[in-house]
Image (cartoon, rainbow, N blue to C red; front, side, top):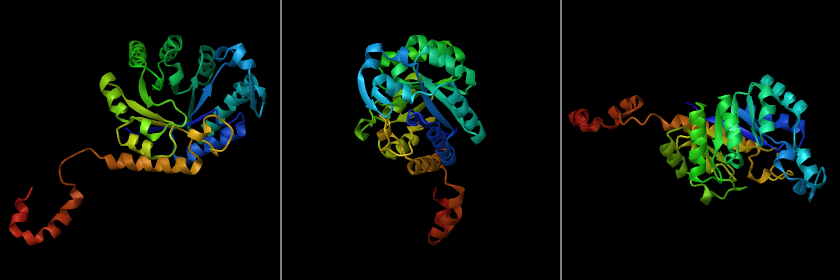
Length: 284
């Protein structure tokens, strides 16, 4: 099974449908399988006090202005839906509240996503699991008991899912990657495990691809110097092309693990062992 490569656009579009489309195009041209966004109902996710607090941004000087500036509504998402269908790439989003999950249902999307921050929100977990769509579940900043609970909820609902190893720091330093956790999650829960990375660079993602992950999610951006909290942990277009190309090569290179001689080696064996004469035919 090929690794599902997800280009996380998130909020890196900075409230611009033009930039969102550019990022969708980058993902498609690079060979990604899907793009992902984030959906929030601002007044449900944040407190009034927090939204009224000061924050300088291109949209104003309060947290509310910044949050609302980054949030797409129905018109923009229908445009995203149309653009993705034209390009032939899947899209989906992680909902940060129940109203946002309900909002996403109108698009008949193939996938759902549980963001690491929402893994402890049981009401959202149950609503998503009831939809029985294949769900990617990020496990950043979560305790084992939290992961136990979400796995139980999705198994009881008979909703297909896979966990995604994730370290929720932005950007993540390489020494915190703990990629061996991928195997530990697979062993404990008996399910497919992907990787959602927030590191700078590509090496850690390459290593994850060699560990048998079933999905790989990385944030993408047009330029890491753009405004936004996720930009520094994102991959620019050229880097994302390199990532997808290398992951596909790694998939092919992993092989099936057979111990037998590769048939392509036979002629070389005969040539390079010719000086051994009769003995070469007995060597195994």
